[in-house]
Figure (cartoon, rainbow, N blue to C red):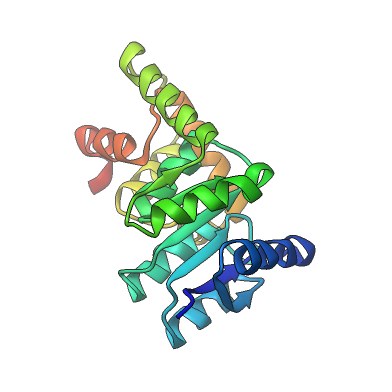
Length: 213
Protein backbone atom coordinates (compact mmCIF):
# COMPACT_ATOMS: atom_id res chain seq x y z
CA UNK A 1 0.00 0.00 0.00
CA UNK A 2 1.25 3.48 -0.88
CA UNK A 3 2.45 5.68 1.98
CA UNK A 4 0.03 8.48 2.88
CA UNK A 5 1.14 12.11 3.05
CA UNK A 6 -0.37 15.24 4.58
CA UNK A 7 0.79 18.21 2.48
CA UNK A 8 0.73 21.59 4.25
CA UNK A 9 1.44 24.71 2.19
CA UNK A 10 -0.59 27.85 1.47
CA UNK A 11 0.74 28.42 -2.06
CA UNK A 12 -1.62 26.55 -4.36
CA UNK A 13 0.69 26.26 -7.37
CA UNK A 14 3.60 25.07 -5.26
CA UNK A 15 1.29 22.63 -3.49
CA UNK A 16 0.14 21.21 -6.82
CA UNK A 17 3.74 20.83 -7.99
CA UNK A 18 4.60 18.99 -4.78
CA UNK A 19 1.63 16.69 -5.20
CA UNK A 20 2.85 15.71 -8.68
CA UNK A 21 6.36 15.10 -7.38
CA UNK A 22 5.21 13.00 -4.43
CA UNK A 23 2.68 10.94 -6.33
CA UNK A 24 4.29 10.52 -9.76
CA UNK A 25 7.97 10.43 -8.89
CA UNK A 26 7.99 8.98 -5.38
CA UNK A 27 4.88 6.80 -5.59
CA UNK A 28 3.31 8.33 -2.47
CA UNK A 29 -0.34 9.24 -1.95
CA UNK A 30 -1.23 12.78 -0.91
CA UNK A 31 -4.14 11.79 1.32
CA UNK A 32 -4.90 15.32 2.56
CA UNK A 33 -3.89 18.93 1.96
CA UNK A 34 -3.96 21.95 4.26
CA UNK A 35 -3.29 25.63 3.69
CA UNK A 36 -3.19 26.73 7.34
CA UNK A 37 -1.84 25.49 10.64
CA UNK A 38 -5.34 25.03 11.99
CA UNK A 39 -6.28 22.80 9.06
CA UNK A 40 -3.09 20.76 9.49
CA UNK A 41 -3.84 20.21 13.19
CA UNK A 42 -7.40 19.19 12.40
CA UNK A 43 -6.18 16.59 9.89
CA UNK A 44 -3.60 15.24 12.35
CA UNK A 45 -6.21 14.93 15.09
CA UNK A 46 -8.53 12.94 12.82
CA UNK A 47 -6.09 10.51 11.26
CA UNK A 48 -2.48 9.35 11.09
CA UNK A 49 -0.20 9.92 8.09
CA UNK A 50 3.03 8.20 7.14
CA UNK A 51 4.62 11.56 6.32
CA UNK A 52 3.80 15.24 6.78
CA UNK A 53 5.35 17.91 4.55
CA UNK A 54 5.12 21.21 6.44
CA UNK A 55 5.74 24.75 5.17
CA UNK A 56 7.32 27.05 7.76
CA UNK A 57 5.42 30.19 6.81
CA UNK A 58 1.67 29.61 7.11
CA UNK A 59 -0.96 32.38 7.16
CA UNK A 60 -2.02 31.69 10.75
CA UNK A 61 1.02 30.12 12.38
CA UNK A 62 4.65 29.11 12.26
CA UNK A 63 4.94 25.66 10.69
CA UNK A 64 7.54 24.60 13.25
CA UNK A 65 5.16 25.41 16.10
CA UNK A 66 2.43 23.44 14.32
CA UNK A 67 4.85 20.54 13.86
CA UNK A 68 5.57 20.57 17.59
CA UNK A 69 1.85 20.46 18.37
CA UNK A 70 1.24 17.64 15.90
CA UNK A 71 4.02 15.63 17.51
CA UNK A 72 2.25 16.03 20.84
CA UNK A 73 -0.74 14.30 19.23
CA UNK A 74 1.14 11.88 16.96
CA UNK A 75 4.49 11.11 18.57
CA UNK A 76 5.59 8.93 15.64
CA UNK A 77 4.76 11.50 12.95
CA UNK A 78 7.55 11.90 10.41
CA UNK A 79 7.58 15.58 9.48
CA UNK A 80 9.67 17.20 6.76
CA UNK A 81 9.79 20.98 7.02
CA UNK A 82 9.98 23.20 3.94
CA UNK A 83 11.58 26.62 4.37
CA UNK A 84 12.65 29.49 2.17
CA UNK A 85 15.96 29.89 4.03
CA UNK A 86 18.57 28.05 6.09
CA UNK A 87 18.52 30.36 9.11
CA UNK A 88 20.44 28.34 11.75
CA UNK A 89 18.06 29.43 14.51
CA UNK A 90 15.09 28.15 12.50
CA UNK A 91 16.87 24.89 11.68
CA UNK A 92 17.69 24.42 15.36
CA UNK A 93 14.10 25.15 16.35
CA UNK A 94 12.87 22.56 13.86
CA UNK A 95 15.20 19.88 15.20
CA UNK A 96 14.26 20.67 18.80
CA UNK A 97 10.60 20.40 17.82
CA UNK A 98 11.28 16.86 16.63
CA UNK A 99 10.95 17.14 12.85
CA UNK A 100 12.76 14.56 10.75
CA UNK A 101 13.75 16.69 7.78
CA UNK A 102 14.54 20.28 6.81
CA UNK A 103 14.46 21.10 3.09
CA UNK A 104 14.84 24.43 1.28
CA UNK A 105 12.02 25.32 -1.09
CA UNK A 106 14.43 26.51 -3.76
CA UNK A 107 15.79 22.95 -4.03
CA UNK A 108 12.61 21.14 -3.04
CA UNK A 109 12.28 18.95 -6.15
CA UNK A 110 15.68 17.31 -5.77
CA UNK A 111 15.97 17.51 -2.00
CA UNK A 112 12.58 15.99 -1.19
CA UNK A 113 13.57 12.82 -3.03
CA UNK A 114 16.61 12.47 -0.76
CA UNK A 115 14.67 13.57 2.31
CA UNK A 116 11.95 10.96 1.89
CA UNK A 117 14.54 8.25 1.27
CA UNK A 118 16.27 9.12 4.56
CA UNK A 119 13.23 9.87 6.70
CA UNK A 120 11.54 6.71 5.47
CA UNK A 121 14.30 4.71 7.18
CA UNK A 122 14.10 6.76 10.39
CA UNK A 123 17.10 8.95 9.56
CA UNK A 124 16.99 12.72 9.88
CA UNK A 125 17.73 14.71 6.74
CA UNK A 126 19.00 18.30 6.44
CA UNK A 127 19.53 19.99 3.11
CA UNK A 128 23.22 20.84 2.52
CA UNK A 129 22.55 24.55 3.12
CA UNK A 130 20.80 23.88 6.44
CA UNK A 131 23.55 21.53 7.56
CA UNK A 132 26.23 24.07 6.65
CA UNK A 133 24.38 26.82 8.54
CA UNK A 134 24.19 24.65 11.67
CA UNK A 135 27.88 23.76 11.52
CA UNK A 136 28.85 27.41 11.01
CA UNK A 137 26.76 28.39 14.01
CA UNK A 138 28.29 25.78 16.27
CA UNK A 139 31.76 26.79 15.10
CA UNK A 140 31.03 30.41 16.02
CA UNK A 141 29.89 29.28 19.46
CA UNK A 142 33.12 27.42 20.08
CA UNK A 143 35.33 30.25 18.83
CA UNK A 144 33.53 33.26 20.34
CA UNK A 145 32.60 33.75 24.00
CA UNK A 146 29.06 34.85 24.75
CA UNK A 147 28.52 38.60 24.59
CA UNK A 148 28.08 40.50 27.83
CA UNK A 149 25.78 43.25 26.57
CA UNK A 150 23.01 43.83 29.12
CA UNK A 151 19.50 42.75 28.23
CA UNK A 152 16.57 45.12 28.42
CA UNK A 153 13.63 44.15 30.68
CA UNK A 154 11.64 43.07 27.61
CA UNK A 155 14.55 40.98 26.32
CA UNK A 156 14.93 39.32 29.73
CA UNK A 157 11.25 38.43 29.61
CA UNK A 158 11.67 36.92 26.15
CA UNK A 159 14.56 34.79 27.44
CA UNK A 160 12.47 33.67 30.41
CA UNK A 161 9.55 32.66 28.23
CA UNK A 162 11.75 30.74 25.81
CA UNK A 163 13.50 28.96 28.69
CA UNK A 164 10.16 27.84 30.11
CA UNK A 165 9.24 26.21 26.79
CA UNK A 166 6.85 28.83 25.41
CA UNK A 167 6.22 28.74 21.67
CA UNK A 168 6.64 31.83 19.54
CA UNK A 169 2.88 32.36 19.35
CA UNK A 170 2.58 32.03 23.13
CA UNK A 171 5.44 34.48 23.67
CA UNK A 172 3.73 36.97 21.36
CA UNK A 173 0.46 36.62 23.30
CA UNK A 174 2.20 36.99 26.66
CA UNK A 175 3.95 40.17 25.53
CA UNK A 176 1.01 41.58 23.59
CA UNK A 177 2.94 41.73 20.32
CA UNK A 178 2.75 40.06 16.91
CA UNK A 179 4.36 36.71 16.13
CA UNK A 180 6.89 38.31 13.77
CA UNK A 181 7.86 40.82 16.47
CA UNK A 182 8.35 37.94 18.93
CA UNK A 183 10.62 36.20 16.40
CA UNK A 184 12.58 39.44 15.96
CA UNK A 185 13.05 39.77 19.73
CA UNK A 186 14.32 36.21 19.94
CA UNK A 187 16.81 36.69 17.14
CA UNK A 188 18.01 39.97 18.65
CA UNK A 189 18.55 38.33 22.04
CA UNK A 190 20.44 35.41 20.50
CA UNK A 191 22.69 37.77 18.55
CA UNK A 192 23.22 40.02 21.56
CA UNK A 193 24.32 37.11 23.72
CA UNK A 194 26.36 35.45 21.00
CA UNK A 195 24.28 32.29 21.30
CA UNK A 196 23.10 30.05 18.51
CA UNK A 197 20.55 27.51 19.71
CA UNK A 198 17.49 27.49 21.94
CA UNK A 199 19.25 24.90 24.08
CA UNK A 200 22.16 27.31 24.64
CA UNK A 201 19.75 30.12 25.45
CA UNK A 202 17.95 27.91 27.96
CA UNK A 203 21.22 27.04 29.68
CA UNK A 204 22.07 30.76 29.79
CA UNK A 205 18.69 31.54 31.35
CA UNK A 206 19.14 28.88 34.02
CA UNK A 207 22.68 30.03 34.80
CA UNK A 208 21.57 33.66 35.11
CA UNK A 209 18.43 32.84 37.09
CA UNK A 210 16.13 34.25 34.38
CA UNK A 211 14.02 31.09 34.13
CA UNK A 212 12.68 31.65 37.63
CA UNK A 213 11.99 35.39 37.49
